[in-house]
Length: 335
Length: 300
Image 1: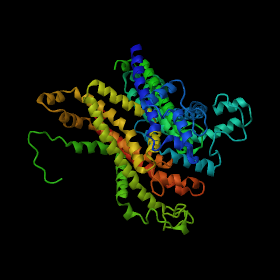
Image 2 (image 1 turned 90 degrees about the vertical axis):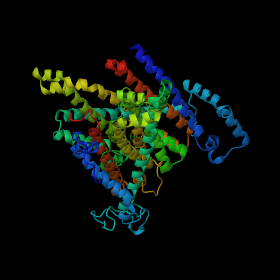
Image 3 (image 1 turned 30 degrees about the horizontal axis):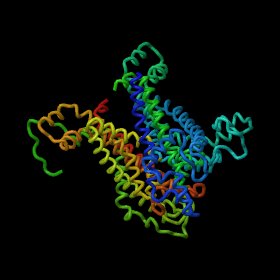
Image 4 (image 1 turned 135 degrees about the vertical axis):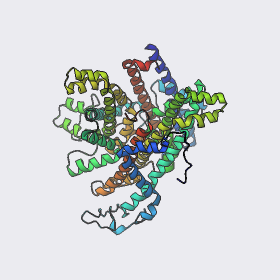
């Protein structure tokens, strides 16, 4: 087991170095001189230009620059935003809770609907509920979520007026962030109506971001359940006279969950890509919108740092899922 | 099909591979339905300039934001209404099919060709090179695909061509992994050893002996990445990093229509519906392809 974990950790290191190399090359691959871009319309004196070149280390050999960059990364120094002049690291972690809150809610939404949908479809294989649910899942899976978001806004914000269009909470409420999660902070603040406001802001983005995971989980649960339902121990359980609910819900689902959980774990990348679109449409102040805005503002250190942090996060989650899977399923370890 | 030679007597009547494939494919009604819709999409993409009532950029300023024909105030001159600049929605949508089809074809061709080649090389190469290639693929896969595509487009400059390059690059590792995995499985089989013993050289072993037996999962992946490519290109267009206005690309059309969502639902609804229907038809076909090509699932 230890050997398995170590071997996974060992493949993590070269991949991480590669990711740092890509994010390092990003600024250097851009057309034009980053320092001139940073100066913007104002322009620079020659002296100031030389000073900045030295400050950013562009006068050193590229290899030396990369080592300096890596050294900085390992010490949590990702440079400063051109625009706000704040460290990229601080900006990332002040916006990250918003994305995390949205992603967690989207995952809860997807699992809460996707698991039962997959079980119902598998138990009724080939019948109407199966066909209806799987058709719906395929539509969800094919959905351009940016369009889906606009449709929901037309319906729920435009026609019905139930939900706000953007942001995390109404401007009427203000409180100091404690956890960074608006749902929890609004409860802690004790202000009347704050929680309802936060929840109504969260509703549409949650549905939009959760749609594709929901479809994937439903499809995966169905196929995993179908595989398990053919096993002998299920027949034994049925023969013992256990109720169908107990056989399907406990005996079968528990074993069908392993591949489903893996899929959920590996969906972090999908979620973050979805968060880019969802946050942009709903003006949700998280890292997805921050990345898009920075790309448009040509705030390159932010793009560079964000790229690295996001990729590292995805890698850590995938690694964790991998290792956990090895714990659950000993067959994997031997490969 | 022209005249075929009479079948040799010794061979039992085994249906040709293609016919067998269609037999299993046709069992999945959804897949056949998807195929017909996709055929319609290809037809529209090919003949858009002749089917569309107007040019995609033609403006009728007096008729800006005309609703669709069946809504009050609409007219059959513009069956799906017009956009804020008075351009006919139907004509723009029909022309948009060309861009989506083009994106799908180019991305699948480039990423599959590159990915299959690299995957085969990886399967046949010594361990260190194999490991190195797979680590590079891991690195690309560590980035969420849309984010990496966005950043690549930021480097290359926003345009449809650059969006296609970016999407193809991001799609490629999936082909590499698939090809490598199934080629490694084939390499252990006797027929490959036999071919080696007979003296087949490396290129022949790779492309003639092994590759045809790895094609099934690659074809399914090609269908999947066709629809992903259309979705990603539309998403990039929507974010302003893909095709640029006034190109009637569906995602770009949605981006232009955003400010009108509460006033003119049709400028928002139809481009997205076009994306959804196209992607859905391809995914339906992909499910049918998988069932027909994957021997493990056959008759299960």
